[in-house]
Image (cartoon, rainbow, N blue to C red; front, side, top):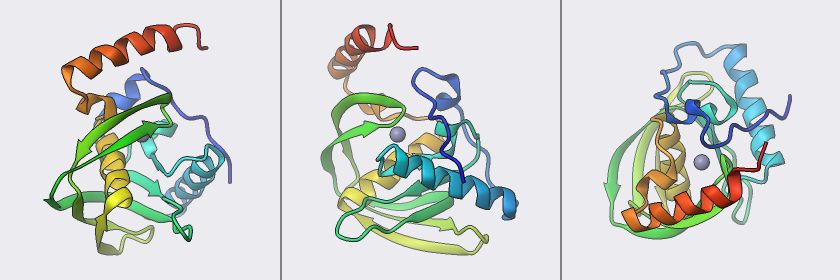
Length: 167
Ligand code: ZN
């Protein structure tokens, strides 16, 4: 297993649509293991494949509340959304920037596990928000794309100040 480099905004891969996974073999398992290691090393609660440079519909999530539980999502699709919730989000690809985003409060989704077996999941609260954030990544959407015009302007100013001198 290896800790991979996390792609940072404005890396163009973060804006691309990912492709569905069709092979559930050792290559996928290695990717999942590396993504888990990378997420834990970065102390993140979720990581999507494009963040480590792979354009495939794969994400890992572990919100680490009470007990740590890793969820592997392959080809996830949101089936239903219910209610609204606002919470502060951040992203390993936009380090140090945090802002409040409104999303669905509860969701149900379908996905496949690492062996290709389909499953459904109901999520609420932080887990729901985190999964929506990761599924967005698979569609080339970043959490800052949900900001209001005013907050997006603040983000642009923040970027100018904070990311210009970063290598
Ligand atoms: Zn993110």
